[in-house]
Length: 252
Ligand code: PGA
Image 1 (tube, helix red, strand yellow):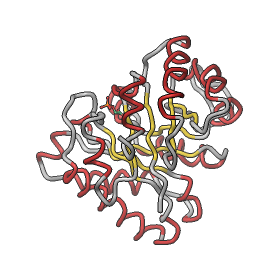
Image 2 (cartoon, rainbow, N blue to C red):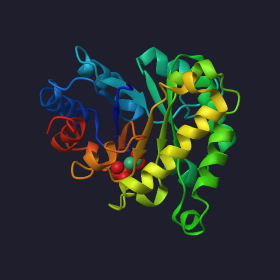
Image 3 (cartoon, protein in one colour):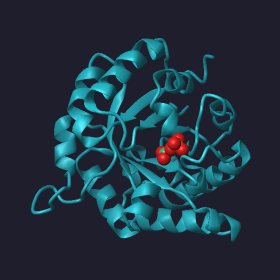
Image 4 (cartoon, helix red, strand yellow):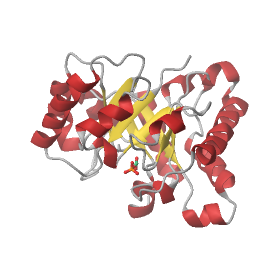
């Protein structure tokens, strides 16, 4: 059995103090939850303080982006070595906001993914189609192309250290969630793709999360799908009670 993952993507929200308060409020609300891996991705400037706030818990720390070089003249960038040093276990790579607002392409996403793996940081690779692509019936083609390019050069033995997040762009921050069936169709494709490309045994532990307007009200229906292994949560992760009730999907 794969351990589900519920990951919070705070995006460009919360000051250091606000983030620490949120973690302190969250901890008692989920202290009795077992068998769910909880991950929090604050902004870069909060990583250090959030790591301290997470001490004594099983909650894992993630960054929201990374550069592919270890050091050098890359003003404004953060290297995988720095993320490792500060205590990150995971890093979100290829989020649609990075692809669409900051023009990240599959080539740079692939470089970031390989560099993170090399430093022992587990990538949470985001893939997803836009509304236009879905309307044109290109969803599966788009996801396949992203997976082929973003995972190029990954060894099958590394697949256990990769998390995939399927995030339909039209469902992010819009309040509009993919139905469990719409999500399941893509998740099923992603799992088949992984098995075909990397082998059944090698990808048994590769979690495929759903992201896009996940809320306490829809998490159960999504998690009931056989190929959805967790969620990447944006807006609803900014309030301790709503994030906690998503984490508690198996209990309440
Ligand atoms: P949302 O964001 O939950 O606010 O839709 C999800 C994400 O972008 O990861």
